[in-house]
Length: 115
Ligand code: AMP
Ligand code: ZN
Image (tube, rainbow, N blue to C red; front, top):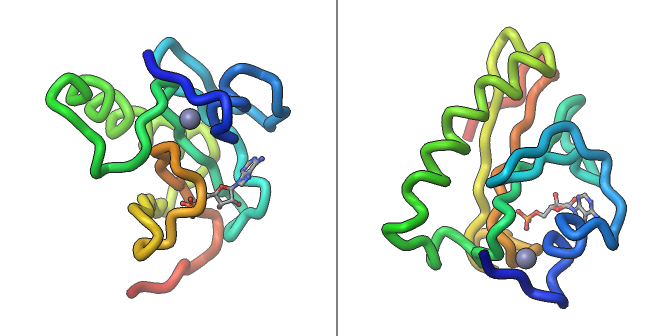
């Protein structure tokens, strides 16, 4: 599993930067976004330092499947019975600020609005 000592999310995974963690297992950690855009705003972060979707390889398929199946479980735990939104920003042009792959899970507003 890769780690980057200069990466904010690797530091959160290592515990050297604090976070409000809500879930953790051998593949991912999940913590609250520091600047929430909705009443519930979580970040699902692989423990492996993968920069973005652009860097995914065949050997990540199991991890990605795990994350996809985890999302509705986390949403349910957070009480998001009306639904939830997931966002993945990729590259600067996609609005990515932290270059360690993460999935945003948002919900809790009556309507988040569409694109
Ligand atoms: P992105 O634009 O997809 O790279 O989003 C990065 C997200 O990380 C933003 O929503 C930030 O609010 C969030 N963020 C930045 N620093 C922290 C931190 N220390 N703890 C929790 N979330 C953070
Ligand atoms: Zn990292």
